[in-house]
View 1 (cartoon, rainbow, N blue to C red):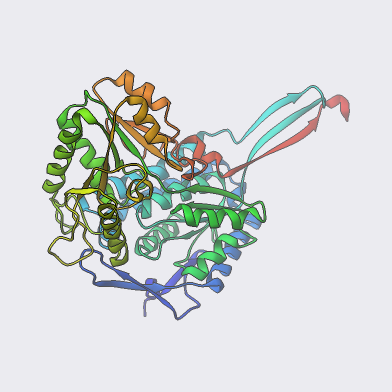
View 2: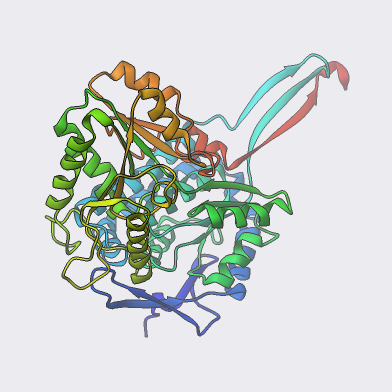
Length: 486
């Protein structure tokens, strides 16, 4: 009788029954129905996954292979993921509720591109160079060594993107990995594990557990885990940083955001309508840390911009994620939907007005209407906290200097944007913003070759690009005496 993969964890090169009877229920956010259940893996399963990764790193071949040899396996991994792209699209659309028109190009094809990028980096990277130390009269081999065992902890809003932005550079560097998907979106992780198995990674190099809270806490605090790569909320990121700091273990933390979109007076109406609808309201159903949700509009155009955004919000098709016409899908859970609605209610109580949306569409599932809040000030909770839904706040300003000050008045520093016909002016404004990414006129993308991350409470370190590979490397200097020193 074939094994039920969704009753297993992937450890030491094989799918093994989980050592727990507890289950995680996975719901379809578009209708509330149950899709599947998976193991709520606890400390016992986490311990054996970490032990497998530890053995594979300490005694297995992976960390000792050349970059080109690791690249060959990573290429096979990318090919195996490509072969599963259709089922990955279907699975992620169902478990996360993203519109299919976004899932295929961004969440699947875009994510697989990360693996191919780091395969090429592994093939061409210089992991060792020789320098001369005149002081020591030695040749010095400066080596970039893999950091060790990595825990890759991934969120529900970018399930495959978040996974492969960690797995690909960690594996390219020679690390071994324990991959833990979010409890809300664990199903795609079985497809990732299948693809890894097909690619032929040595046993223990890539492990996957669908852990519950107790299992997750065990994983990030495990003494045999050398580094935690995490994407998620700032609050959880702080707890992970504290757990790792006690043992001086490494972290890479991509956390929350509170982006400001500075709309200059010369920004065309059609750019505002299409661009801010896409990057502020509709992007990932609004469940995106890079959503441009604080929209700063000058008082001279304030009413016009509110009207443009409200009309656009009302025009966005909301509905079944499988429908190719759908632009905005459901929130991930009923609890999260209610949290978003609570933010809207609190904003109204604080003096904001609802220019569009603000309620629940007349349909099953965890939907929120695309919403535009006007008369918002930057001290309101709606402007200071990460709403994580299809909601934008329009905040007035009098001068560009004031707009920059408002944009900077946040503990976050992940991204912001500038909207204008004057690209040179936009670039100069962008240089004043203390954020990891500045998008001019909505040029927003997760490019595998471009570093991504934030300042302040938006995290520590960078993912993607050469910098993403650096995050998973330690530096070692080996002094080899000159011949005359023998």
